[in-house]
Image (cartoon, rainbow over all chains, first blue to last red; front, side, top):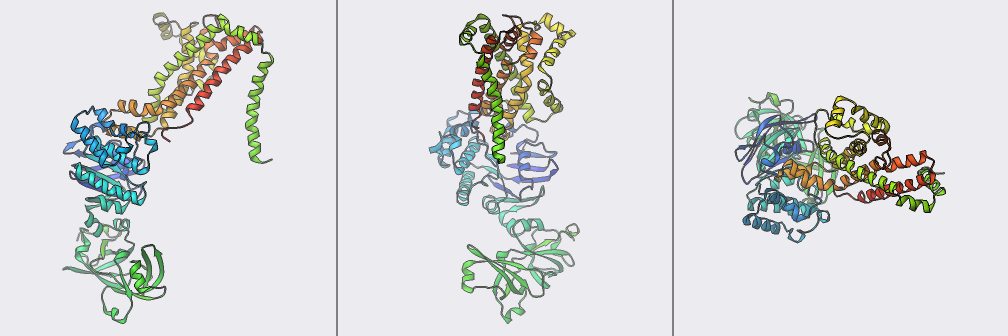
Length: 376
Length: 258
């Protein structure tokens, strides 16, 4: 188990602010965040390259905060992999065994099996300079796992690979995690990668962990506006709470000029939203969660349904992005529909459509202005 | 004339200047004197002394330069800027002034004590080596630092996360990767030491068959108007120097960690 307790660290004018995360044994915790959010600085603080200003780092309950890098029992794979270019694949993978003087048969067997399962046995005697991107990645993983440390820190491990190879390695990494009981802390800016690899996901923005939880929870219940934006929720509207009790709550969405009801479950842990009357809020919905259909007069009486005029239609390979302007509003809504759905209907510019914002799919977040006011 | 042609013209003008100087040597070259010069005991002594002193001074410089360059490249510490500036001293002070500073040092109580109790430097071979060491140490440190700067520090971080101590990471990762850079620094320092004149003659004098290095021998021959002999010695020095620079070019052709 890896426990990070209130780590603060500094690099130039950038600061990590009291970051606390836990990686349970044999779990993968992914820290996802935009470039410059402090992910690499956090890893460097954990590995011992940066001295934290405060906080503790515990590895299986042992405080390693003040130990030197080699005594922490944590392996590290940096973004550029840092494979030793003057060594062969074999020497890279066996570097730790040689340094630590490990000659135990069981360790040798483990390395042989590891090399086989990573598919690098055939390139074992090749120079690092002659490897492809995927082979370099596998070698770096093999070297880290072969060190015998079960705690691995991976910094954007697959960022330089193309999509297909990247996905192959996702599966491989999960297999390795299971097979060797690896406790993984991975940082990435790739949401898809984060939600695939992570058993737990933390969203880090501006040097702070904004939200931590299971992957479904983080994906479906963003707790702050920054997290929602980072998770790609582009339809975000300023609103004011008008009632707050029971399973369904309501807000008046000023920017759309309508009342919207939403499920109380969608507020997640955000403080105070369940008692939201009069509170400034942000209502958000993913463009993929908006249901779009041709407008008909029956739609007018339905709640959470907006009469909109289609502004633009963009083809995006397997899907189509539509922007639509609700009647009486100046703020447009973005909708993403699968191309096959569109083929059945064929939405066009200027057409009137009904956009249904399902109460179950709406996210209700504290607004930037009202964050300090939450709590009752 | 295009800018490209003009700039290439200037590049060739540098080659022309040096080619003219070398060509002028051949005007006075007496082939029989060249072979006589090469075979003479005095020339061979100068050559041996020059090679021995330059090699010793280079080795001493590297013993200090490699760890010092690593510290300057990798660590932040108080006094780093002062050290970095001091490395330039042999370049901003003329060699004669540097030699004079060494002489003056040996006239201080500490210098006198060293000469009386440890080793005699003034007007001895030790003085030749010391003068060349003082001249090359700063340059060697700067060159090795440039080589280490090129190696990402992440290699050492990863080596340490795999269990290596800082010294082991340095020996197994940084040093092998800096090998070419260190070798190039050694060769350039050696060439600098081999051609060193000002500091050497100031500290060690110009005693024939005792402290007479190749550059000093050239100076002595020229002082006594032996132009043909001077030419022969200069050609030997040029041949050694150019071979060395060619070696450096070959070594620096490719980089392991680009």
